[in-house]
Length: 492
Image (cartoon, rainbow, N blue to C red; front, side, top):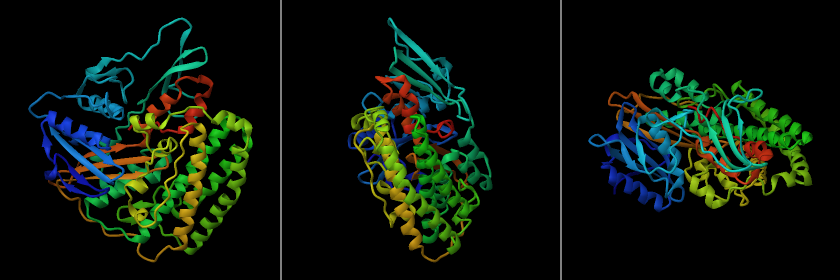
């Protein structure tokens, strides 16, 4: 076998990785993808040794994570692109080229990931351009109104119809992956909380799981349940925010304001536990900093019961409105085949009938013992992405009520040792947007030498661009909000 197979959050010895010649490496990755696996990372195994590359792939049916190695030490940093046959690898190859100078040969569209105007070796990048009578170009951003983060959207239009949307990101060069390598352990959780401010719980969950795997730390069941409860609280809060934004984008003020009111109850429930409405300061290595007392539990139950009772009427108002449905249905469609080929993840994937949910396919923490339901819709339009949010809120409420009712006794922290030397681990978490991936590696002294992050927005921005093809440009805000993607999660 040309690769090693591990489970989510299972640490493995670096010496167990088989480093192949590049042709054999390419074929091994190709064979895995032909057998149903998809890529989640393409990166050097250690930051300071770019010639030693790993491809990390996952198979959702078997719950296996595959790690394939390649040693380019005695050859040029070139390899035959996989992207023509498996388009979802496109952006991973572009990122590898931009960060480390690799050249994927015969790549269909080598483009910037976090640079704006250059590609390999600082060559000028030419944006896609349509020519013809009455074809015109519309540029939006990178500076947006209000507090929206920077991103550039370039539309090629014929009249009001969008033929192509090219999204250019990367304006915030935070260098957060390098910060993980150069910071002290006390700073790293704060960094994890800052990867994407609206996904504080999701990214911090993945980071703590990484460190706990590298230190062989076993967390208590009570800790695991509290972590999954707050993870679902974050999901509820952000889905309510998304529903509010979608209603606002079609000018339906009443449900927009009402969803916003309920979101306040969800984030206030997080504040009851941690003191922060975004859950900052809750996670520590080996557990959680704050417990859920009976008093806190009663407040959370009261808040969530209010959400559960009220949201039924708000949903009915939104989804029974002829005006809403006329804007939602058959707008911004991305069908199942397209969604699978480009590697959509999370709610966007499930809205196009793909059964992709890390909590189910790669279960972790208390999700191993307390499963959630796989929720999919088939139409792949704005309606599906909107309706899926409402259904996922219902499922998250059910999960939290069940966990709070059966919250077992136990400690909330465990002792954490030193990082294991020459070890690596892949941690996957289902954030509210979808699949979050953190990968870490240590050297012979137990120091971090690689830290790789993939936010679900990395996968899904291209999906947004596809939904705009043959769609009126006036529907862009609605399509954009139905994905509700992160700039900061992408601009690492």
